[in-house]
Each structure stands twice: as C-alpha cells, then as structure tokens.
Image (cartoon, rainbow, N blue to C red):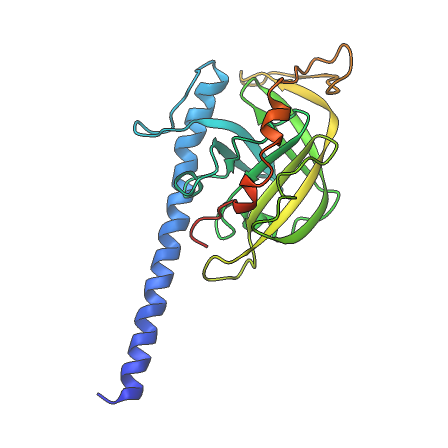
Length: 236
C-alpha cells in the first residue's frame, strides 16, 4: 500500500468517525426530547421536580417554540444538560421575569433553528406555572465567549439565546452567536386539558395589578454577568 492510498483510507475513516459521532449526538438530542416532553406534562400537572429519567439531577424549567419547533428547556447550562436539551442559565432571570433570561444549546442540534431566525420573528416560552410568554427577536450578533454582555442587564425583560459560531464549525471556538428577543407585554395561561380554551390576561412586569409575580431573586441572578459568557455549546 502506497502513501497516497494510506492517506485516502485514513481520511475516509476519519470522516466516517466524525459522521458517526455527529449522528449519535443528533439522535441522542432528539430522543431525549421525547422523555423531556413526558416530564414537562408531569410538571404542568403539578410535579415539583419531574426528572426526565431516573438518574437525572435536573428537571424541565420551560417549553420553548421557535419557528414551529418545540424544545423542552432544562435547568442548568452545563455540558451534560446541553447534550440533551437547550438549557437555562441558573443565574439568569426566569421566563417572563424582569431581567435577562439566558438559554444555551448546541448549534448542530437544537439551535440550528437560529441560523435563519430574523428580526421581528416571535419566540414563545411556557413556564412551569403554565403561563406562556411571547418574545420578539430584536437583534443578532457574534461575540467572544467571555463577553459579559451576553448575560448582562438589557434594561428590559429579554430572552437571550446562545450557541457556538460558526454554524458549520467542526470544533468549538471562542465565538458565540447570540439572539436577543424582547418580551411582549402580555402573558396567557394555557390549560393542560385537551381542547381547553386559552384565556389571556395582562401581565406587565412591575406594574400594579399585574398578574405576573416578579421573583425578588431576579436582580440577584442578573448580577452574575460573566458566567454565561462562558456559555457552553458542548460538542460543537
């Protein structure tokens, strides 16, 4: 066997290895969402901590819809959770709260949908209490992973989605693709019973009579501005 043939075989084997690994990651992410949806149903039914599988040390915190695609979001943006689902940065605000709600995910699985997302498009996110909030995409930018702006205060309730950049990259790098969406000033509570109607109610954060209760810990969570700059996009 000459050197050229050996090199070709080596490159073919390496390509097959990368392709197989990529398919494994994709399949794991998709199958996990099936179990997570079951855990989310139990959450809406009142379960305090619905583990998606017996050994899980996390639980669903939200359900997010982007361009018709549903994702169950886990609490805790670490590499282990990101292998299964988009994950919420614990130090950031919860959906619907005043502050910056930060969610990270893989660029080659759940957050491939961000590639073509445009300003003005809606993102809906449902909390554990059943309230559903709508955010509108306001801006997209590429930043260094250490940039404290990612988790910083925006002066308004926002949703910040983070993934690795570029989308067609093979390995993780220093840059992150960030989408910022601003909260529309209403919320609706969705019944979990089949065929139930949807009732809308005003919930302007911070205003008298609002139906949305703003957690007093929101500002404390927002203080940890640098932690999401290291937002992991595991495995990309």
